[in-house]
Image 1: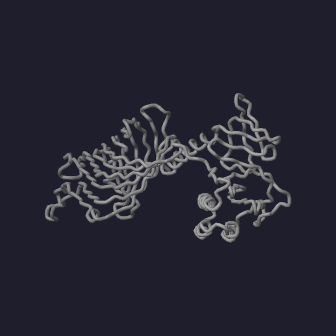
Image 2 (image 1 turned 120 degrees about the horizontal axis):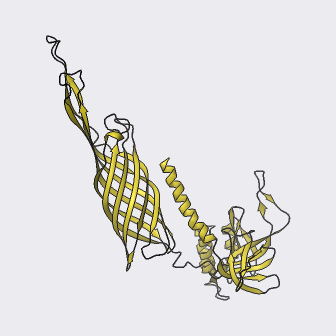
Image 3 (image 1 turned 90 degrees about the vertical axis):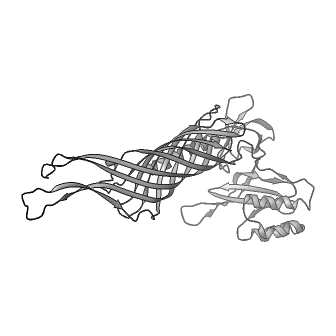
Length: 417
């Protein structure tokens, strides 16, 4: 249940950041039906095609929604350009086969390149299509079954482009590189890449971090009478790890961590011998001890809260890993029975130590989860990390005494490069 709760938290963090990006207005322009260019800001959905855009003119608070049938084109200041075209497209139907309408549909085509060859992208009803236009061909739809044959015909006058076609895939980056290579044979008109230019805020970079700290663990075996949760106390130890994060200047980041720690659990129980035994009333302090080493790999989603200098954040994610080097012993009681020749003497209850052998060479898979909160203040290019974390997990094991469970609280310090 906790595992699915963590997955839900990760999804909510990710969805919040994505929705925040989608709701923003981006500077751009609209070309209306009369051919007038209107400047302002534009809000669009992730898949534009038939969906309308929302346009707010410069200096105004009024927002107007434009469908493809109402304007000629629109563009965004990040270099993206969308043209309106009427196309006959296959539509999804309730039957298994798509239905091709006889009437043309007005859609937004994203222009990926301009020059001697114009490449377009269309996201329509869950699929992505690519079209290409040249002065000698008009608008040609590239189909998966024969797109390389079509491209060889269109670019036959350019050996550099023809040589690249066998390696070209029906995807945006590959087709764009092919069209740009065609410009070496036709320098005029100048070929330009109209895809969105990544900004420093959007570009993800890898960051490496070293971390260490103190961990308080609660180890127990639910299926063991003497090692269950109520019989074991929390105990502390040290934890060391390293992390690799993907970050940009936005609030969302992704990371994978490697955590190594040697955990131990101890427990003591005061036991009083019952009246049945010869040593009735004697008290024993029964001890229990668990040692285990864990190597865990949390997969976390970080979300930065605000833009203060302390860079507070929260994170959550599932944890997988391994446990090994288990050593378990506990004290139990037994009674010493007198010889049959002295039947009047009551048995005596004593302490014995039980060692669970054969576990130190066992490696078990571990699954669990982790949530944390912390701060990341920057000093130059480095960031210091102070983090409080709660984690839990269990072994996936059927070997006696059953799977080991653990809960832990951590305080960690780190340095991110």
